[in-house]
Length: 121
Figure 1 (cartoon, rainbow, N blue to C red):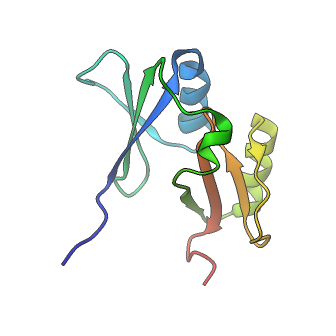
Figure 2: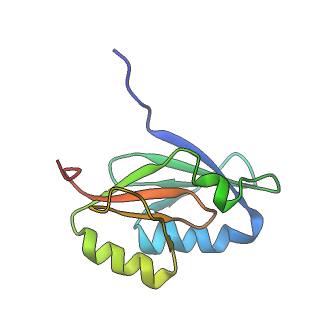
C-alpha cells in the first residue's frame, strides 16, 4: 500500500515571513509549531496533523511559476465564509476552468483550491 504523507515543504522569500504567519495562523487557523531545526524554517500544522514547512530563502519560484507547479486543496466546513476571509486578506484569485471552486494564490504564490469537507463529490 502507498499513500501520500502528511508533510509538505514550500519556499517563500524572507520578505513574506510575517504575511505567511498571518495567513496560516490567523486566516487558516493552523498551529505554528515551535522548536524548528533551522532558523529559516516555520512549521504549521493543519487540523488533522498535516504539517507544512515554509523555508524562507532567496531562491523561490515566481507567482507565475507557481501557476504551473503543484496545486493543493484546502477543505473547510464553510467555503463561502473562508473565501470572504481570504479575499479580505488580499489573496489573488486564480481563474481556472473548474468554476465550482475558488482557486487562489497564498503569500508566495502557491495555488490552493478551496472545497467543502467532502471535497464537493
